[in-house]
Image 1 (cartoon, rainbow, N blue to C red):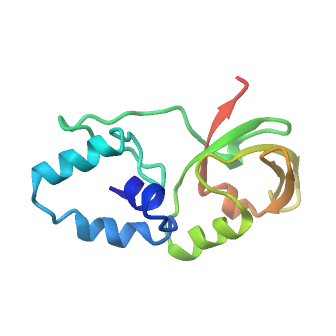
Image 2 (cartoon, rainbow, N blue to C red):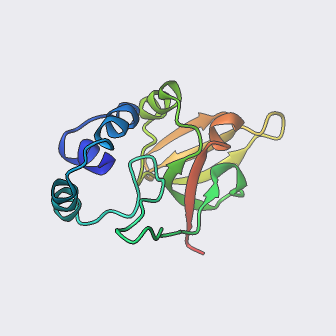
Length: 141
C-alpha cells in the first residue's frame, strides 16, 4: 500500500506510515488484491521493509547498514532502520531516497562520519548516526 502512496500519489516517505496504518483497517480483500496487482505485487514498502505475499512469506535481501561499507565501496539505498518523520525528511533534503546509488569517498576517523558520492554527481557529508540508520545493498561485489 505504501508503494501506491509514494509512486502513484506522490506522498513523501515520511507521510506514508500513518496513512498506510489507517488503510490497513480496510477489510475489502478484493480492493487489496486489485491494488496489489495494480502495483505489480511489490516485495518492499517505501521504507524498504519487506511486504508479505498472500501466504505470509517475506522476500529477504542482502542488505547492510551504510556504516558497514568501507572506503571505495558502493551501494544502493534500500531502506531505513529509523522511521521517524524528522529523519526521513532529513534524508529527502540530502537527496537520499530508495534507489539512490552511493559510493563511500572518505571515512572520518574522528567521529565515523562519511563523505559519499550520490548518483555519481553530488558529494555530501553524513553523520555516523545517519549511516547507522540507512540500509544499502552493496553493488559491484
